[in-house]
Length: 340
Image (cartoon, rainbow, N blue to C red; front, side, top):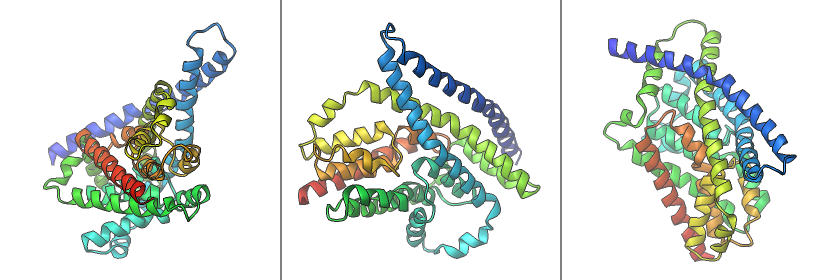
């Protein structure tokens, strides 16, 4: 008990320190925006174009993701504090396989993209759900999101098979990885010690739901916003450094086209709600299977997502999730290329 109390106090102190990063990050983003404007009118600066592209891309990823992170945080607090635990227990099946399958379908009623699902998954873990169950929801929800399904339909229609492959593939991958994690002998070791301590501290919280909600929102945003900023900056940097011509040159090969778009999906970090329109511009150069692999892998895992996951899961767990998700997405993409 004493050790848990010490860890909880340390987590609370760390959260307060991270809260100071929020205004710092906001000021940094404002300075970046001013830098873009200055560089656009300063042709004498040799690195103006690459730097301008980096800041533009990084800010685009950040601004696109921020509303969903806020929405996900609000839904997470609603789940943790305002919804009685017995409601979820009654609504979900008791058999593990059916329970995970039901959780993977929650994205139909929770229309947030992959970055907004991280705080929701954290909320599930804080409520006592297993890592396997949380990961099943985390991976499936961005693909089974009704907005994602609608935009994919508008981009590719029904007859191409891309929409069906994306929806079924996302459901299968999420449930396979959830099943794999459910067999871990010590599932608590999949989570970072800091997050485990924060969960223990949350269970000990007392007081009104209003003050607890405000505290939880500040704590989550202080943790997730710096991670989102780092992930957005990495995505912008890699996009500037990787020539798209190399990717397009690989588009006609049944294997290399899949691998190329997997890499592109990981790098560009586009929200799952709009990624179908982005990759539509490449559909004339790439095979259908590579498009499916892009739409699956990018919705489940990308650079900004990895940065957000570091707030909850250990590095080893994240690496395994990324590799397995990439492998399964590639297998589905290659399969689509074989039958089309």
